[in-house]
Length: 155
Image (tube, rainbow, N blue to C red; front, side, top):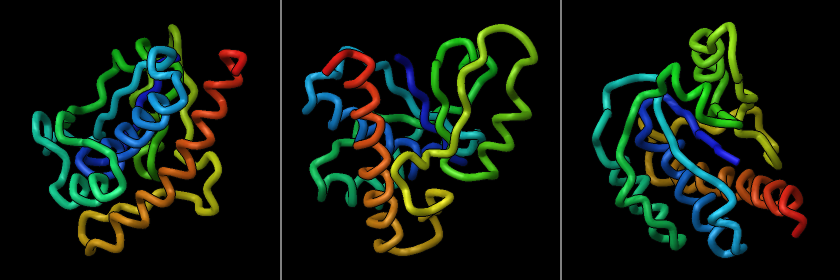
């Protein structure tokens, strides 16, 4: 299974989701079953590390985002990934516009699995509490994804 997380700049929400799910899959013995990546709909942060506040908040919960680097979503991602998870409606709409008309097309969803909200809010212009809220939401969503991967692999 191949999963891509998408937010606007690929420095806050989507790399956090990638780091959380990577750690949770590793803890569940399922790391080899899933290829993970994250990307942004915009190109402002291509090649850059995640936001320092995202790195710090994630590290406080035992997640390492330090090796991740920003990249922009490409049309090729629709061939490469089985599941593309957008963090909010704006990014989902952008992905729908980029989606090719033909060929293998992955499922597009908001990253809502197990969430009590409609979107994962962008913490970029806020303080530390916003990054903690993103972690809370994404930990919950990633627990649901781990359960789905485990079920697909008979565990």
